[in-house]
Every structure is written in structure tokens, then in C-alpha cells.
Length: 185
Image 1 (spheres, one colour):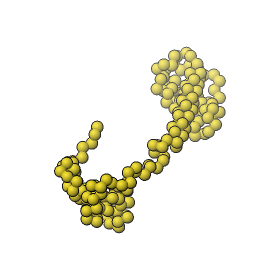
Image 2: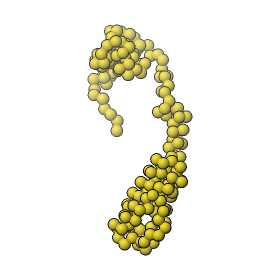
Image 3: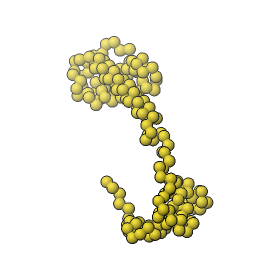
Image 4: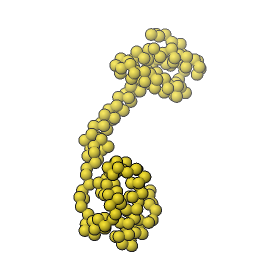
């Protein structure tokens, strides 16, 4: 441990003194964090902050105390961040719309009579592609596996099936199906 440090006279001396304080800072961080990896991270962040704010250090004051205050601030920031992350993960686990839970099955289990007739009138390959991807919400890959066809075939059948379905449902639906998709900003 360094018990006597002479005040640094310039930026390079401040950096040299700071480097000499590193083992002492590591010991403090290890006592606070009780984990070697966390202590290393805390010391690293402390050194970075001290260098970033070296212009705020007043020459002739106690560098050890100044850097110790930075280390304590970094430790508290790490604790608060870890607490926020734990709360966020707990919230995601109990949130029905969170990314950790599976989506609920679609609410609509059946089509109204007119679209159901139009879908039933499609050729089987197109109809199955539309049913699997659009109604059962399978991915293109899952639908391709289920029908035992290549992925490109599913994409093609789905495109053509949607277009035929739109034509069967009327001019407004056919016009919407033929327009390129516009992404909302």
C-alpha cells in the first residue's frame, strides 16, 4: 500500500501516480464487490473516469482520496445497474407480452364464410401454404418442412395463393394484393 504520495505536478505525473495506486484500488474494489472479475471491472472503470476527468483534479490535493471517491461512485453505479437489470428480467418473466413467454395462439379460429369459400376454392398447394403461414402462423421454413417442399416453393405458392385469394374476394382485395407493401414509419 502506498501511504505517502507526493502531489502530481502535471498530467504525466498524475497518470504515473494513478498507475501506482492500482493495486490499492483493486484491494478496495475486491472488498466491496467480493468478486475478482467485478473488482477488475470496477478498477478499470475507475481508472478510465479518473483519466477522463483529470482536468478536474486540483493539484496539491489528496489524489488517493479523489480516486477513492471515484471508485466508490463506480461501485455504487454498478450495484444500481445490476439491480435495474434484475428487476427488468423479473418483469419480463412475468409480463404476458414479454419476449420470454410464448405468444398466445391466434384468437380467430375460423374464417367468415366468404373468405373460407375463397380459400377452399384455391388449388391445394396454394391453399395449404396460405393456411400454414397466414392462418396457423408457421414460419416459411416450418411450412416447407411440413409440406416437404423447398423454401422457395413455399414462398412462391404463398405469393400466388394470396394473389388468387385476393382476386376471388373482389376488386378491392385484388388491388391491395397487387400493390407493393408500404412500411409505416
